[in-house]
Length: 541
Ligand code: GLA
Image 1 (cartoon, rainbow, N blue to C red):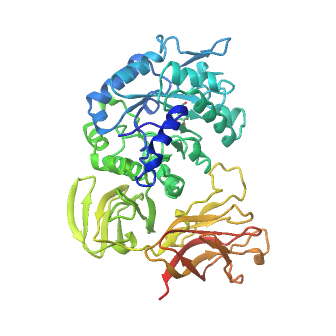
Image 2: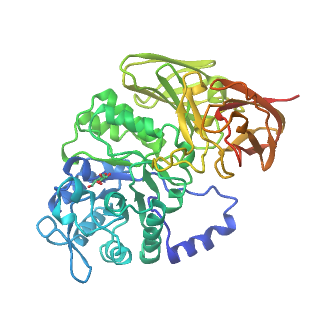
Image 3: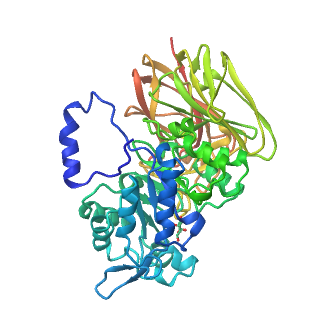
């Protein structure tokens, strides 16, 4: 299993030269989501040399290394102070022998080592855990010096870069600040380094160029409300992940008091959504059932699947969600599906196989119980208990052409969750919308679009596109709404009924698709576009 992050300098040049003749013939091998352990959830800043070494020992002894967990990540709490020359010193009592011995010890076990810092001057621990040693030890003004220390002198393979000092205290711009840091690391580190950006909200499409994973939520805690909240945050972010870069749902709280069903939701959803899997409990005392869940090879395989996809919501009716993703081969016959019930009462979830784009007698396997179930031919239907998930893999006989595309699964180039723009493009819950969700605030500038980058047509040809959308009353006059539809770079305005306001309407156009993948974009360069619910494609004869 390949677990390295960025390829720098010479390594990158070598890699490009060595694979380029075959680049088109082979499927690119992607870095999978990171798997390992992090000190934060259980110990916060109260860590030391012997504790970290014991966790590394337990990673091996508990069979977790063999299951694929490789990283031992030291989070906040190792800082000492910055000396007069600007050199970072480690905590004299907690890590009297420094941090290199820790990385060496971790490496001696065949594991990889992770470290932590802040984009600003002061760490989160200095703000929230009253850690006096967290002052002036962040990367701000010391990017290259610290990169040399962490990666070249100490030998760490991963870094999580937090934002407390940079955001709350210095009010820096996220994209600019993280770009400076990542460029410094790329230019300085002489080993592959995996980078995690920790801004506690989806920060924008730029983050994919800078990191292997990025946090999308505030800190997790060991209770159901927190797990459910973070899943909710990630439900519609699948288009922003991919190509070896992942939405980070934060460290696992498994083995820290959740019920069995809640732990299955937690692990199952982190796996199918391809989040990094960083265990957060004391590895020496994990309850047996939690350990077995963390080692479930079929769930881990979903997470580490070579396609590196995050499942998207394909149906949301009543309280139940159905999420799906391809596994092993894109548009092949195998798909993984989660039937997720976040509510506090049981619910029945039924979905036609055709909505999952599969046809014929379809094999079903329960990935939590690790048992085959009877094959199905028409639909899947399960009663899911409160706060529970059923995870299955399916293998159909045929793969069907999709006909409906939801707005909330599309790529939104201008979307972020930083809350800094009053009318930024956003998701909007509307009960009568398909999947109960719209994308709102599209248009106003040419770049503020909604993009489906993989609209699939088996044979190509002419299609009628039916677009469900909603004009909402806003600060501009209603006639200001326009809908520019662009298919594979060819644009047309689709007429809207401007009399229908705050209600769904369906508008249509005729488009040409080519065989294979197509791009469909909607927007309006000078006015608002309507909110978009979904579109359907109907092939013309
Ligand atoms: C922030 C991060 C946490 C953890 C702490 C350390 O809150 O989001 O994951 O790293 O800082 O202080």
